Image 1 (tube, one colour):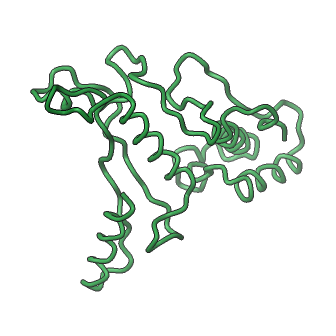
Image 2 (tube, rainbow, N blue to C red; image 1 turned 90 degrees about the horizontal axis):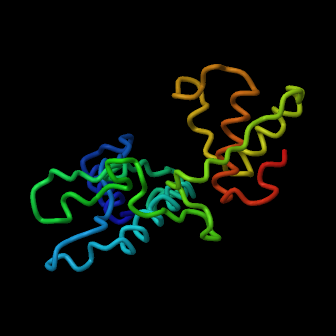
Length: 189
């Protein structure tokens, strides 16, 4: 994927377009195929999509542009049972139509965090009574050295409102907690 993104950047540079971001609008792997599609398996889909998510969450960019975090949309969220053959066309989703996971994504380094696990809903939020100065210091660490994904709590983004340190900290703390695979101690701020 990085090679394709860098190829797009390189091509645009040759046409004197250097300030256009590349957005990957579809990337994924089918979890099931017919006899002519031997690589469309749950294991391959899990490996590809889990590694893709890890790569994007690492915010490392590409070899040509390590400073630019890639934006990628997974193809796709739900299987589409009514799609025409081949079998793989109906099996790109992370979930079945009833919202249960087709397979569980493994996105932490330890392999214990299952990104689309709908059975273990554990979150990290701010405790009541914590003063704003302490919260701001913890928020600064989580969004900085802690490398939590805090992009959605920036001005103008989806989770910026309500604009207060408690709500922003809860979002960032949970982002960090999930990134760390819900590990013991990763919600102690």
